[in-house]
Length: 290
Image (cartoon, rainbow, N blue to C red):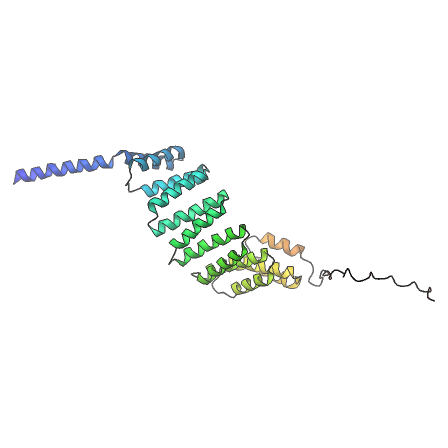
């Protein structure tokens, strides 16, 4: 019995040694060296360590960490956006079966493509984000906001308004809904559709539980609309109401200082003369009648 117990003790000791040797594998050493280098700001050394870890540990527990660090170094440290695309695509192939991870990877990839100026590829990435965000209204809303900005940059305002309208309808809370409506109002203002822009802002301002900053930005946009209509009294009233809540109060002060007086309205240009009409004749000088 004692011999059996002694034998088991030896076996357990050997297993422990095996476990120690495995934990001290080349991949583990590379990972620890990469972590240490990264924490000290030696990013090129960290990059090499994470790359070695991915090569020698095809089933490694910390592969996600390695992929994320490598993509972060490529984007934020080295500015190698093309390399970041390759890394994120490979990361998506490996980790994309998890909807949460897939959404994060595609969201980051869409941002990288946007920085590269490849808006078509960026939209494709965000379309995949929408698929992976199903059942998560917050992520759906965030993705639609990004897509709308890309559509706006591409000049496709039909898709801009449709996307932002869907965003507002499906928003998980009033703050998110307000941000969608603000972007919608701003998009309408870019194409001088002031009536639709005003409608979106009015809807936003009727919402409860909206942050002071979002409300102030919306009121500032509404002031733009009234100033375009030459309603300077209403414009001044709106600007005065956000003196302390607008993110940059100096902008409000400058707008107020340059705003025409409420009683002074610029003369609106009349319609152009009909070219078929004869030119107006000067009045006949007094005293020269027949």
